[in-house]
Length: 135
Image 1: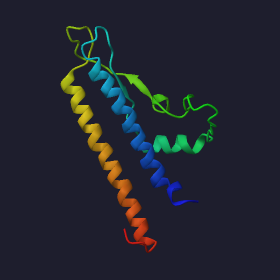
Image 2 (image 1 turned 180 degrees about the vertical axis):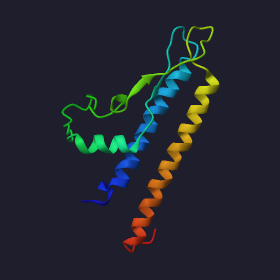
Image 3 (image 1 turned 60 degrees about the vertical axis):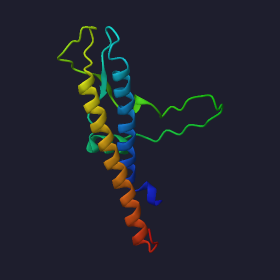
Image 4 (image 1 turned 120 degrees about the horizontal axis):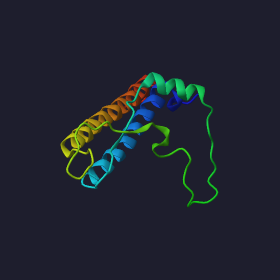
């Protein structure tokens, strides 16, 4: 087993992918804030226990690139549960996107992503020190 196959690294990598996917959905919400009838989306809250159970129970899917223009089956928001937001406020455009709320979500998401990245980097440094390599 390689060092990067350790559960802590796979969990942190999955968490960072979740934040990246969420950032894309939040950006779509902000971009469509004035689109009539647009309904915002967000991801189901990330839960380490659920994700680790799902990762352990599912078999690994291996894809082979035959054409460079084909897309990957494992990327995008399909790996996480995108859902419509429950909007309590409807704007004059007829949608439920409030820019202030969306920008707060974007900022919180960015800070959480940075925390996960920092944990990942520190874990690698700890392993390097433990192996006798100065970080």
